[in-house]
Image (cartoon, rainbow, N blue to C red; front, side, top):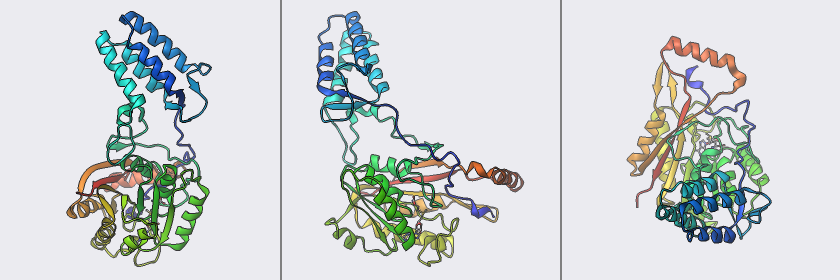
Length: 376
Ligand SMILES: C[S@@+](CC[C@H](N)C(=O)[O-])C[C@H]1O[C@@H](n2cnc3c(N)ncnc32)[C@H](O)[C@@H]1O
């Protein structure tokens, strides 16, 4: 059946960790002093020598520049970032240009400049090479670190909420996930020090999510609560009141992709909508209901894929996008993300290829992440 294509099946190699590469913890004051001294150098030749030596010291684990862990006195640096910054100074054609790069590097160490919706330090934006800014995401491994698991059929990869939380919230902000499922968003919110509330229709799934979240470290002591209920009707103002809040700063929605996976027998479950039109109406209700508590200028993100019925591609993604645009939201981005089916199902893949060739269609390999901003 064509409309039974899976959303995000676990891959055989799904056990890869999402850990970043090596990070150097450099004593900030020492680095600032050493960089300031570069400003007074009299010629490019001397400057290049000094930079070369500084680079050697910074990268040497036994040098006095390096601490062993993150503390208030150290700044974390990916080694590549440090090298790129210093190489740029060395590669300058004139002392004037080199001094410009030195000042810029100093500023990135000593000053923090963020925008209104996140904590990304724009003075050291090059450090954030793990934050995606392209609209095409090809991710071959899901993050399975900590309590993350691909066990709940239809859960999304943790990289999705992680990226969204880092781009669109600040530390201590509140995130609402209207279709919480196994709690992937809440686990990520907890990791990044954001409060979160998830709404999930099925009581047993809500319990499962609670158990996962409880097993995840909570270093910032944030609230991460799963509420059992229907996101199209739940009273969000009343819910937030329980936490002495009146609004949230990010909404993440990962609804059923209509009936591709039937999640329950509950008529309020979007996977039981009677038609595409009914599904879109339910999405509209879910959006309207949560919009009341989203702060102006803040973001709403919806993750959804398309479906196939009797030889016809149903563009659920774009239809859903239109529902939200019609409600006055500003469309900021359409991200296309790949998904892979499990390598254990090679025969099934071959069957799909055969069916695609016979039927004149293409096999789904992508889903959408629509990013909206609530207008002021
Ligand atoms: C695609 S899954 C979300 C998976 C989630 N992102 C995760 O990583 O586990 C959709 C979830 O929405 C739930 N659901 C369906 N209709 C709902 C409704 N009206 N209110 C709240 N949850 C609903 C389903 O039970 C299912 O767990």
